[in-house]
Image (tube, rainbow, N blue to C red; front, side, top):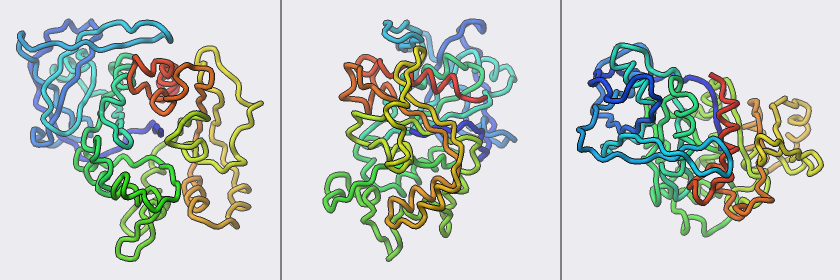
Length: 351
């Protein structure tokens, strides 16, 4: 997964203030609201205006319980939140206290964090992480969990999914670096997306889409988009991830992977085994440039930018066989061992 801490700019909309929250302003609550692009109106100078304060639900509206947890291995505490029926455009998660301040003329939280699911996933995959971010930084962030590409919609192709995300948001946030394993039957399994992932697409005789996207190509300014972020951080499973290999998820060559003797555990983050702060090695890039092949081309293109890499291992965890889901705590009850990875993200999130 890739996290970048920067505040992009985009289409700004002025929200219509809602009624004051029924919760006391001093009580830190979490509020889950659903937005519709059609409900946005007006213009302002800040992108945060794209998120309208949600109206307070009637007293009879059902409340839902959100699980939040700071410590590993503990049963999560329960925090009551209000949730509105989905009207399209994904889900926005932010604190009730921040919403109340906005309704009274205050400013929106400064940072927008967009969470996008992977193949056959859904917005629920980021439920735990989203709640933790808002709980930790209630006055700093709005979390957007994208809903436009879920389940079999993830088979429709990287380009179409990107268009959906762009329509859902005021800007396109980018796409993760994806696993490539050559397979002639990929499109039969995951549709058009399979052709993109395995580099077998050639629309109108052009090069595979993902090869185009590691540089600025024609009207695709992918690398320039990545460069606009102040930081680029890749969290990667070092083992037991049967969906995405370690080399691929950390954007490294085989010989660049940390040796086992370098993998040191941290008591605070027991599953974080190695952190690379992203010192670029220009000489290594030049030497490897002599190698051929699409994988090398993609690595060379992406590593023109500086990346921080965080290596994760669940080798001693009972949840290691589902490491692909545990690293993001897809379900707390099944993947709770990954909570320290989410805590590491928050502790190192620069605001």
